[in-house]
Length: 209
Image (tube, rainbow, N blue to C red; front, top):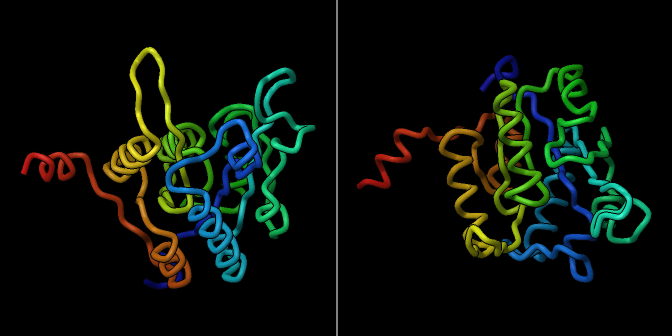
């Protein structure tokens, strides 16, 4: 692929904060953080080396919320993220990185056409950002082994972290984002190649056999 058609990517690292790790209020379960955190770090390092912009995002909840307090240890970026260089820092208070922030304007100013999503959590801030990015006309990539989910149980039912991550990944790839591994993303990013997503019709037809 020539440079004229190469994706103009930005890697967005969403909410990799201590809240999601051991000792935090919302520990990520699947993929385990022992796998996802090193992959996030590798993606950041590879992007920085290749000149691909890196946007780091942190979530700060209103005062009194049980998690993501700005002035607590759990509300801080994980040290592996905090010590790495980034090109832009976004602080948000809603699930989507776009809502109430300068993120959309920053992407437009830098002529980004492809958003590569890493970080947490799959079903909440990642999903909100993926859906909104696609609706804004961006190509989206989801690094499935550099992201993660935790389990839920409420009046609507119960679901494991693995089920949530798998189902959202399949849904993303059917229409909203190209789901890929960190290794494959790094290779495509370094080569200036796009990663293709699937489509709703073929995803459904395969499931029907």
